[in-house]
Amino acid sequence: MALDAVFTLKLDAELRDDFMAEAAEARRPASQVVREMMREYVEDQRRARAYEAFLAEKVAAARASIGAGEGVDNDEVRAIFAARRAAVR
Image (spheres, helix red, strand yellow):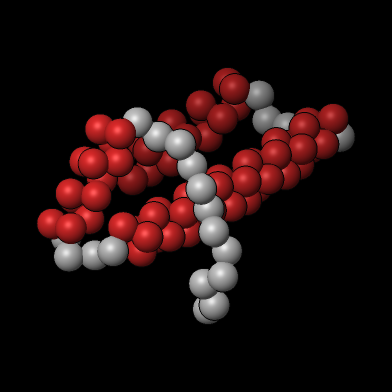
């Protein structure tokens, strides 16, 4: 991977000093630590969006099922699982 982009940011001097000290303590270049944090952030955001899309799809499917009259009401669900728990005992 070519490292040809520059990223400049403003931050508190104390935070910068603490960060640089921690990176030095870990014997890692600060830029490497920042790149790793950025990659983790990007992956976390992508994972969160994928999960949100998954949930939205599940909700849409459930709503369609209920709209089609295929839903099961709460009392029936409770009865089904009470019977399952009783069978396991």
